[in-house]
Length: 368
Image 1 (cartoon, one colour):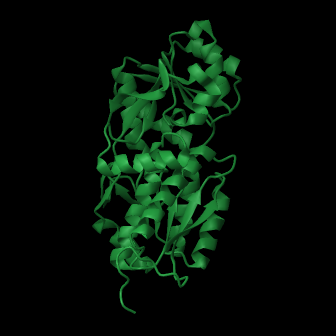
Image 2 (cartoon, rainbow, N blue to C red; image 1 turned 135 degrees about the horizontal axis):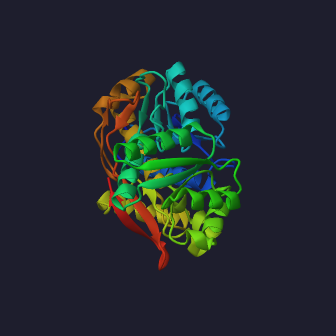
Image 3 (cartoon, rainbow, N blue to C red; image 1 turned 120 degrees about the vertical axis):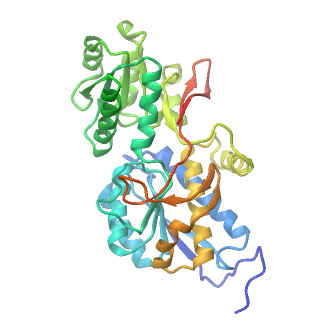
């Protein structure tokens, strides 16, 4: 068959399929999932407008993980049987870890968009690559911000989770190395009022929320903001809850001035600015960094599939040769100490918050 002219896509049904893992229902973080999916879909549309994958349309086969690791693993099994060329997506770290384990076992390439847990797989693998920075990298940047701002005594209110436990450990190590202290409180057993009492007794100047949203994050923020004993306390949410409109809607002014991690450059280049505009039109709100991660995921996979075809093994072998201009800089994958997947080292990292004077505006407080 002769090659298709640029900008044309065959309509004989021979699409190239990518399986997309996205949290679209509770208890998953639905808004994050919607942003991730918007980025994935925008990039697929642009790939197809430009001629697809050597004339074949690119197609997303979307599965809702609902933040459930077992559901995600089952989805990977199903997508592998359906013949997808690769997997993309997922936001929740614990869920992505389950998906990565199955992808590795099945020999299915997986480009993880957003999950940051360092130990995404238990053993080194060539089947998995990741766009988001490792948690140790991002959370160390966050610790540098806190210590630089004079917060040497810190309380973390955490729920039981591998992800939150990993974050607490990173913060402890960073603070201990510079003479600081981290005190852990169990947000799963303490009521917001009891947590406020513990916070007062601790003598800490900052409280970090390592918890789910909206519960219990929203009640805790409201309780702390209304406790006059804690008028000077800094509330932080490193995992990024304040990035999304749902946070501002739930908390109003109480949700401002709460620093979080965001993986965007201080200024977008031409590609990033164009994609930002298109994503804003799709979402009806400013796109989060998660939407950019979705777009970049498909940009990388499309480049690999055009260059190396749809053979799964060849895709996995191509990670170290990737050099794709993404929305946030050139994407290349490397082997990084302590991380067993191919890693983009490194996306830009910022600490930002919502401006109390204009809550729909973000202030950059620190860059990593």
